[in-house]
Length: 139
Image (tube, rainbow, N blue to C red; front, side, top):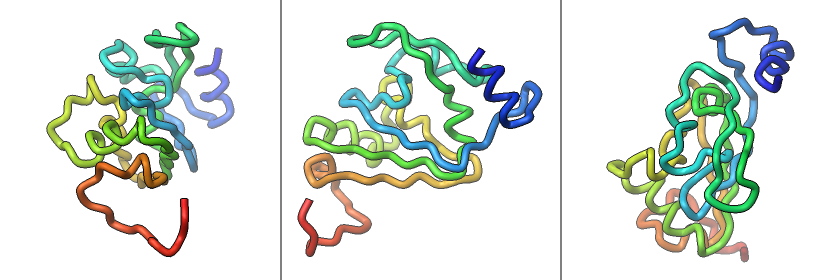
C-alpha cells in the first residue's frame, strides 16, 4: 500500500523511482540506516520502492524504503550523534573496501544528488580526515 501511495503522489508508474528533495537519515552503530540492516535481503532489492525488513533488535518487522529510492534523492542528510557511532562513521566514510552488505550506509551513492553528514564531535572522533570543522563552536 505504501509503494502504491508513493507512486500516486509522485505520479509515477513502475518501474520509475520517485525523487525526494530531501531524505533525513540516521546511522546505527552497525552502520544501518532507514531500517536497512546488515546482511538482510532488503539490501539487494532493486525493483520495489518499499519492503519489510527484519531488525536484529527492537521492533522486529520494519517497513523501509529501498536503496534505489534513497539514491534517487536530491539531498541525503545523515544526522549522527554519539561515540557509539564513531566506528560506523569511520568505516562508512573512510574505508572504501568495507562490504556494503555488512555496512549498509556504504550503499548510499546518489545518482544525481549529494550526501551531507552532520556529526557531533564524539561521532566524528575516529575520522582520519575532517573536511570542515569550526573549532570556535562547542558541540
